[in-house]
Image (cartoon, rainbow, N blue to C red; front, side):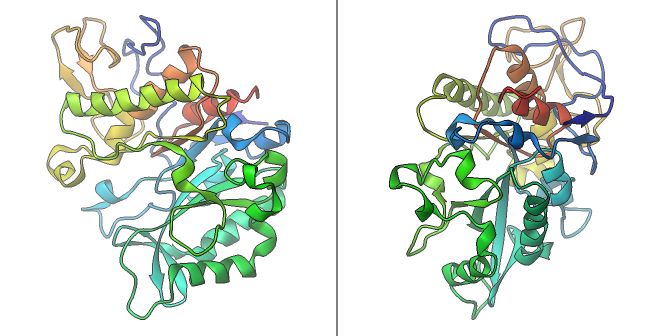
Length: 355
């Protein structure tokens, strides 16, 4: 069962159908958290779901850049960091989609975000996930696996390194050949419980899991500067939420990236991953929303408003949480977020009929 610490709600007033326009009441929002412990635990939610459900029928909370907790220094961490919860915290909070980026180092994978080493090896990742699955055998972990930077000279091929990891831990990797060919890109939950399901985002001579490119994906990760840039990203997120909801029985797995960054310009404009997630003045969980303008306007209708019509930035996590809660959506597919809060994770899980 889930347990939730008290949290304050930023916004709760919906002014139109399928619109998350809201009035700013407080300075925190349960959809976003920069805390290493978000005070929410839901480690067994998949055990409450019928095994006959296919992956495409589930709504699954996930993280983008799941191991991207570190920068090289305090000067670049705002740009490099995607998470503050470690992997164990993520899994115990209910995260079931993880995004693993690696660099080939001789015969091993080192965890990376671009060129930045994330102080862990793939062995460490597997150890944590496998222990979690041993403790919670009715859960499953969907793992996107991708090479994120150039390999060290003299390293083995990506496929060979992965095969070595898989063979050493074979009981905990789902084998797509264990099901009918028609189900290999969309297995039933009962067929993958207690397993890691690889979302194969790398080229190989054989299939190790679900083809990542078979998913229906929204990943507008390059976010334009200014309110129009954030709002364009939001429109992409919202459209994908609606498509996933309207096509819940299509057999297609939807993946919606709430994550994004202003890239190199983020250093000058503060359009960092935490800002795209939150729309806040600073990365702190309790920071105020960033003001766009004091004058009321009909532009950016889903952004939060002050009591006198002031317009504030919204974040993908904050607006996305409210949209899921208030718009009548019943299915979202996989949501990959930076810095997800308890409200976002719980709202996604509840769509599976879990209270």
